[in-house]
Amino acid sequence: MNFLEKKICDEGVVLSSTVLKVDSFLNHQIDPEFMQQIGREIANRFQSEGITKIVTIESSGIAPAVFAGLELKVPVLFARKKKSLTLTEDLLTSTVYSFTKQEKNGISVSKKFVQSGDNVLIIDDFLAHGEAALGLADLVTKADAHIAGFGIVIEKSFQVGRRKLEEEGYRVESIARVKEMSTNGISFIQSEVM
Ligand code: G4P
Ligand code: NA
Ligand code: NA
View (cartoon, rainbow, N blue to C red):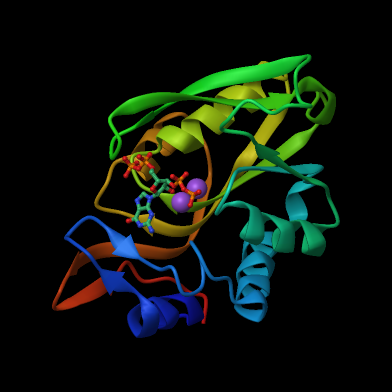
């Protein structure tokens, strides 16, 4: 098991066969040293790609994205889910469908911060159905920037997100890939990272 798989086994709570609660280090409380290790691992995998910007989505994508940005020495842009008081002009927008909430939500970034010539690494905490990831890819594409790939903290490999992203030709790097889970335990698709 790698360091994240071990953390998931130690602290994660399987709420159902499809929902994993990891609020002790990722979705509510953040363990900074651990998150730095996550960011470093994502950065390592894209070290030679000439990344100029990281794009993520509020709120739980921000922590791993900032630590990856610290490592790669590039700025981190997070898409907003709600309209901002100050962020009003020159927005790129996209729509993300949430399976859990069964509703569509707008996401946006300012044109000012992602531009043609940027080589973007997209980071998120979870990869499930891939809707948020594809929404972020849509924003980056609308900005005429290039997508180098996706860095994901926890991928639920039994859901369709990875397949959708790979079908679009994107590289997907996930630090933990959950193959299956139940209240009896969690199994992972093997990774080389220790
Ligand atoms: P879905 O793909 O499973 O339908 O999820 P949906 O797009 O509706 O996303 C709802 C939120 O739930 C997202 O965070 C997503 O990252 C997260 N999520 C999806 N599957 C899991 C899971 O198994 N465990 C946990 N802990 N989260 C999951 P969000 O609403 O954008 O919240 P946040 O980024 O502010 O934390
Ligand atoms: Na989340
Ligand atoms: Na997220």
